Image 1 (tube, rainbow, N blue to C red):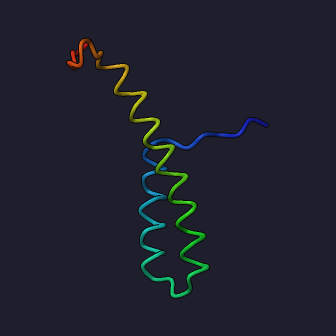
Image 2: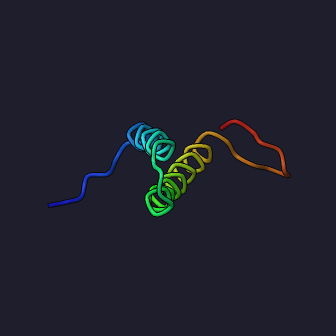
Length: 67
């Protein structure tokens, strides 16, 4: 079975939940584990935003132009 990918919004919600969980955790190990998950989500979200940005904008001579 193919792995279903999460939507941008789902990833963002998951990241928000992790941040809330990290605020409630008391041990360094718990926080560290949550931090790693958050970093993975942030990387994925940044990549999606960059891909979307490239679809809408084109850079020419260091100037951003709408396509």
